[in-house]
Image (cartoon, rainbow, N blue to C red):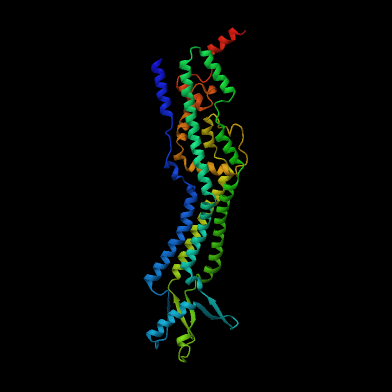
Amino acid sequence: MSLAHAAAEYMLSDALLPDRRGPRLKGLRLELPLDRTVKFIAVGFPLLLMSLAFAQEFSSGPPIRCFCPSNFSIRQAAYVDSSCWDSLVHHELDELGQHKMKSLWPHKALPYSLLALAVVMYLPVLLWQYAAAPALSSDLLFIISELDKSYNRSIRLVQHMLKIRQKSSDPHVFWDELEKARKERYFEFPLLERYLACKQRSHSLVATYLLRNSLLLLSTSAIYMYLGHFHLDVFFQEEFSCSIKTGLLSGETHVPHLITCRLTSLSVLQIVSLSSITIYTLLVPVIIYNLTRLCQWDKRLLSIYEMLPAFDLLSRKMLGCPINDLNVILLFLRANISELISFSWLSVLCVLKDTTTQKHNIDTVVDFMTLLAGLEPSKPKHLTHRIGDENP
């Protein structure tokens, strides 16, 4: 028997999780993987386009080319290019013969509008980082620590039960104490469960998460309006008539009032417009999917931790409307599952529990570990019959 008891002790000691004091949990992921992907694309893509626009401008020279008269000097031609790019106004006559001007400023503002777009798309990320991330980090640190501690308490409880069973000369005393402890619910550690139930009635995290994704959708709608209203108006116009009767050439009588200029950067505007529409259109379903995940519980994580003696949110049907802080925390626990060491242990125990022949006697990790340690999770039948015989 001593060898069996020693083997059980070693098995239980190996099942204990290591003490996690120190900076191990400092690398918590405070953004969901899909949210991080949306952030990198929504913010990084316009910055990439902005760098390409500046690179094209520096490598290809002036973004416009004006067709000056042949008698213009080099100085006058350079002045015309500079003046037309500064004004960037197209002069034309409408159907009634009236003079009409059309601004082509989106070509000039293209790199800066991309920078503004990146800043706007980053604002929801800043909102999450400053309004929700600190509280979420505290919640995750506490919950992860308590989940692992609850698992360790269960293992230590089985170790204690094994020692009492070894020292007990009368098995009836041990089983009576064990049944009393179960009836009085001494095996429970309700702090974690009550904390999660409290988070179920809180809505600050979920409100910030909804606001973040709603702002992303609103910003995407604003991008569509900007591209559709301003870029579409100049999308196909490669040439424009520029007035040069200003400044240096205002007193020149032989200079024509209008000359034709060509936009060499039109292809850049077209590429930026089409690629932006495509990318942000693809991001919209991802953002909507992030919102729909709040409409259902992640019950797989909860069902695994039902093996803990105090964790019965599912069995007590405490899970109501999923739009609350607890559901958001469960999503982030799933994202930080690598920090939750007890999850892998309990997942294995759940699989083994489904294959054991004594399913009706196994409800918690305490029951299963007592079975592995050589103790039955309930009073043996021969002891039950003996008590019945003594008390007819």
